[in-house]
Length: 94
Image (cartoon, rainbow, N blue to C red; front, side, top):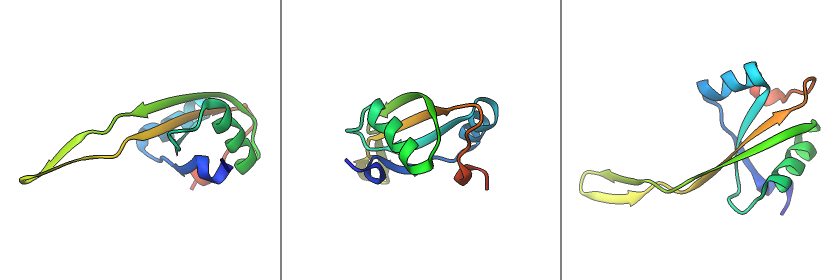
């Protein structure tokens, strides 16, 4: 897989921004088939940073209902990536 196929998009919420400020950890939505080593290499290639640690969260599909119609939210894999002390990713600092 290509690096651009592994990293789908950054996740920017209040909680993830606190992780960026306090612990230098960045959160991304990633491909469900990617493992930690592939995610680490993709982040290093795309953003030119040094990755120390990768944690992956697999979120199961959730049942949702709107009126009488039922369906599921899609399953998502999230990666929390901890960078080296001097590294930053600019898309999170806007």
